[in-house]
Length: 314
Image (cartoon, rainbow, N blue to C red; front, side, top):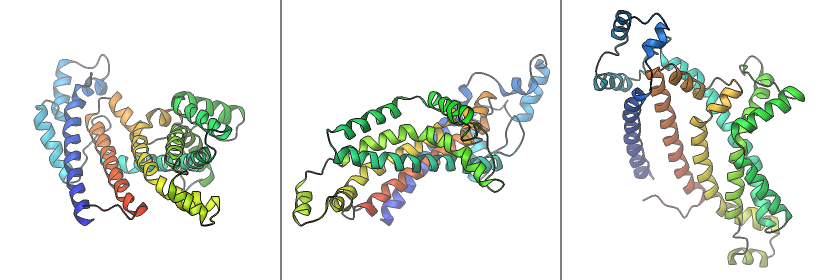
């Protein structure tokens, strides 16, 4: 296990370096100029553009800017925003927990709905329950998040007024206000994920006709014990694999949801950086999300050994 973890950590470091290099190059292909954004229309005279580019260090060749950024990164410095001139690190530390909270809440909600639904569908294979679960899972997968999010805002936020439509409140200031504003965006993200989990759980649980389960029934075990004590543990590995990939996607893929619900997380910070051509912000956010995605995949792989003792890491 120790050797496997060390190898994976080395691979992760190489991947993060590759992502950092790729992002540093591609971000400068975005059309537009941060200097134009800072100066505004009508103020960007050639002389002012030249002076500001020198102040920001944008007149240097791309490879020099990259090496300077990489040197700061090794020291733990994510750089300074070109637009706000604020250090990026504190802003990331403020926004990262909000995105992680939204991702974890959506994952827990998707598991609470998708896993039982998949088990019910497998137990009632080819029956009405199986058909209903399949239809609902397909609807969850097919509904675009911007459509579903807008509908939830209209129905639960404006018409029924069950939850606040949008906004963010700090947990320490108003716990219920914070949770009530978290539920709708989490449900929006959880819909598609619950559909994936339900379909995967159903497929993995279709081992109910295997010989070892017939033996368990012949020993006098109840159907509940057979399903949850024997079939479910064997079905958890593919479900965990799907959950790991889906959580990684949510970390950087919740841009629209955070925008609709005005949730100030990493995705909105990234979107703001792209709109303003703020290269250091884009590089920092993509790097952090990529590192979290790689770490999440490593933790997912390591969890297989806990779920199935027969798995060994060589």
